[in-house]
Length: 240
Image (cartoon, rainbow, N blue to C red; front, side, top):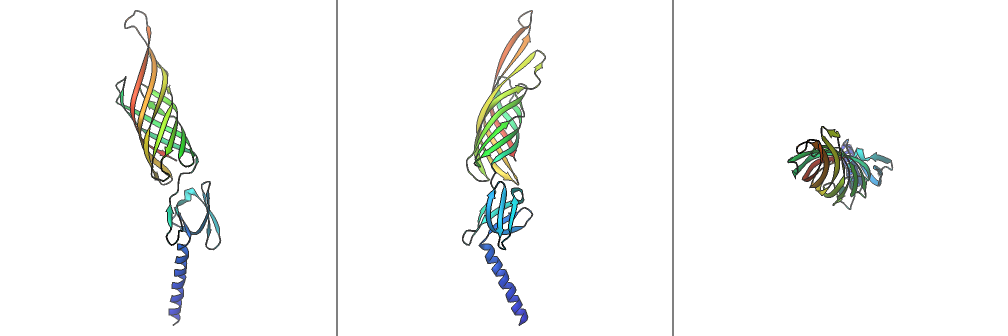
């Protein structure tokens, strides 16, 4: 009789706990723990939750995998979205196409500093190394618009700015630099705490360099060359 009563009390307690958890918010931590209660606030990359026992806990965004909000008898899962503010990104890929100089594939490597507004608009200052008729340092700005406010979403972007030659003068050739502009679309998805993405777009580059030669004269003559690059931009990147 006593064993039956004890078993009944244990089952009753488990049932009460399960029913209570179904009516509570849940915070899933990356260490495998689950905290039940009422999520009080999500702000400045911090999650504040009040447990069923009345204790108040704070967790950083880096500790949280996801959270659910109680809605009637079924919880609704909400993924962690990108925070506003400063970030850092890096991307690399190829510029494919034709030009005045017959280079069908050109390499690009671009680190960037970003600032996100309203979880959808991202401004970035982009630099790095890009190869055209020589190596150039891009000093460009990019605007990116996230079309859907979900972890997996397409986006659109535009980019433009200056191209500064690296290395200066090589022999009789003096590279003056130029400018570039482009835009396109892409697709982003989350990987743990950062964003991975691919992008496809159009890139135009205009470059100038001078060269001295004696092909048609006894004395060196300086010629100015203008190069136009029309490229398909294909890149893979990460944003933290």
